Length: 557
Image 1 (cartoon, rainbow, N blue to C red):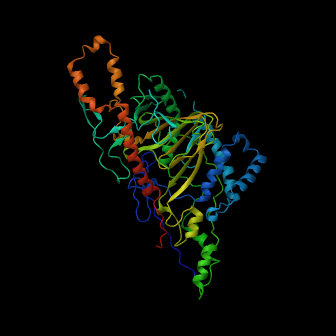
Image 2 (image 1 turned 30 degrees about the horizontal axis):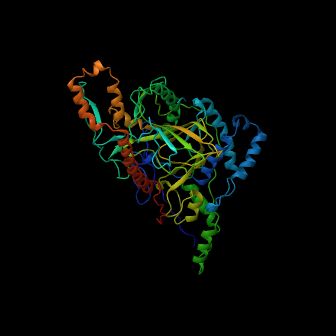
Image 3 (image 1 turned 60 degrees about the vertical axis):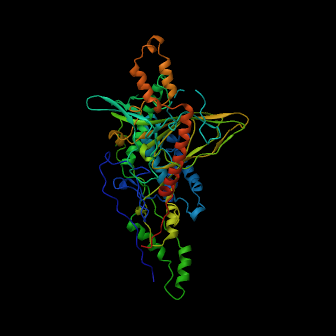
């Protein structure tokens, strides 16, 4: 007797108009017994799972679009046929879950879609293009400039931090913040930790990275309005317009990522109730008849039956292709956390071990998207930036107890983590990568090419605070927090001419005396950074466990 098939699915919430939806984050979440993810406002923004074959299609497309001169070559029928032959070999069956190879239909879709990528590239500024997965963009046509050494703790003296947000952070209960009332009167106070807005694993009650205020005018020009934490605005005055200019070139890519977060995700392989019924109907034609040995036969059938996976519809070029963002940043004041770091390798320490899976910041920093610029390197081997993401189990279609089907379609095991790999981007010199903070990312290991000589990699990062949270005034920036570097205060005071210094009113000295606890020496700042990193490691581990690695429960319905 054939089994009865039922389906686990949750209808998406009603969507707000594009451009007005809250941005999803890896922190605003609920994880119920069904593995749902999201909060009351952002649940509709959380994507369902991708089939393994669609993820492989995206990887194949990225591989082709990294070929030299692909924009011309894809139009040549002979080259296209050769690429198809290579793709059939490249997409051979994977060992894990015995995943079938990509079909000819899937490869044809990827090759046909190249025309759309080409058309978009012709409109996109600065060579912005889709990278290895939905919502991840890259460009190779951005162009930049350039105390005591500050080695990142725990990096084996390989990462030199030039500007890092974990140094001199906002410390709740210790840092001063300025307020301006309606009459223009300025007052100062010790900043308090924000009220808890989520579970303990997502929000720091001790520290916040400090963003600077960036203005993007209606013509797209960028001006930095407040000091960048750890970058002295006078000693490094020439670097500010350079950073503004680089960020200006990042703006279209940030707009693209934010717009993608505002729109329903596009799937190349889609499926619904009817198609799931069809796949299982096909499989059940080979199901054993009910009898005395039915249970044994049923178990063997479950282990061996064919899994009929969905195919994409033929690719169809959209009637219009526009690069206009749904969420434009022109005319906005933004908050941006800046990080500038070097990684140094030497013959004595020739290997970089790679990073860990993580997202940027904590909930109280509200980072919505990240931009990384690999602006210089020498004698460094190939490396990649890998991505992975979780999904709302409530949008996963499957039949009751269909362990093998779920494994082969989504790559998810019962009681295994609700997570899917989202491919990797090559991190070559001059490459800029922009991606949403709902994905975890990890740097792969890399080494010196010539192990007898030193090598380095220079990296600039922009972490963009959720513009909607900036508009609401929820995040404190450097426009309201005076510099906390005691050396900056010393420089400012002792740079005054003696005749001015001698005549400073008593009230000024009193203000400096009262503000003294707000300032930190470099030695104290490094101790604070260690405390911040220890807290953040625990919170990130908890967030990874609760959100990204929560177990998938194959319901019996």
